[in-house]
Image 1: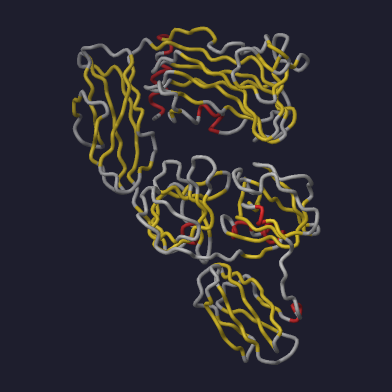
Image 2 (image 1 turned 90 degrees about the vertical axis):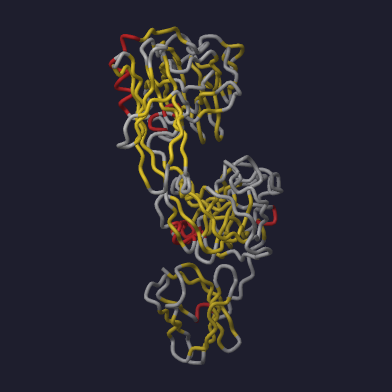
Length: 543
């Protein structure tokens, strides 16, 4: 919502009645045992702390082993009333991404409500600052959405952090002044292309029966209405500002406004161009992409797709792609919004695809070194790759949602087991040099590989390295349209170039040392060089 609403509330602060703490045992003074604070329905890796406290005799010590939660549900929420969340925290071990609020408003069906989600997840939807390992207070005041009946309050710790929590409170301020809050769409929202009508939903609090509601759209004249929601006609690539005023006795007693835009589709030919787009804008991928993996765990309906130049992750929590696709299927004409999570580019579909444009496609992983993944990981994000000749630094068996360091000499990168319903879970971590096949990934700047199956962990690839050092390929990467291939002798060189799908795109015999690649798109290619029945393969990057 526009800040005008919160300024309006601030001017009427004298019209609020403040209540008691709605959290039970928010000061952590009573414990069933040393690992269970009374009245907290979710307590993972929590222990009673009697030394490091903010107030009283106890605090809660949160030791993360991955992602761990401490939660409690508050019922009896009144829509429109203001609620102040206050807590004290101290991050003893960890960094500025290891502790946060992770709370939700819930409606009568116990479904999460997205309104005010940012404020319910910490400062600017972020994490708590460590503040030099000192007790720090975080507080925020927000209005309960129109359909809220309860608040699920939760704090989280991540990684291997140690966090102390104390003196939690959620207090209600009853609003006795008339107010109107536009609950949908959210302010600044970009709606999908093709949205021809938009519902403007709003909630009224403490509005007298004699009052009327007027709606103004852009520069149009105000229109009185009793509808809720109010449906307005919308079109692509047009910004809208909607103002709702509550009028009583000729005087405006409450107001709110929202601004949103109906997007238009930007057409791109391939995933390379899509990845160069702007997060938050909508795109149509006119070229074909091949599904390399379908995530069957969870409810995000995620699919990894790639073409000859790049890959991207489809994140489809709404289930917009309702067609049943398989690995190896081609998708053409994909439409949606470019988004990002923790550094990973994602594509959120806004329209279904009726059928696969091709089936049974086979993808050949790009063979990369640990050094290459560390240095140029963005090139391989969401693409099928193979790390060759690496050694796991851990022993035991593979577990879900776990990172494993893998080394190639002094170069160390991360293999993350991210798909918990595949057969890799519980298999032995190899102690010998291995190859790892999986999907290139990223988390906040750290590039990774996500193996999928037990078969993705294998012996090192057998590569024909005969006279490999006798050939050189430069410049690599190249943006000049030409590359030089040199050899230790002057015999003719046969060159075959393959794209990432294994399709041959060049087959030439060089009498000079120069290969013209100006007709090839940006991307990664495999170059097979043959001379006197000796062959070697090299990777070529065209920018």
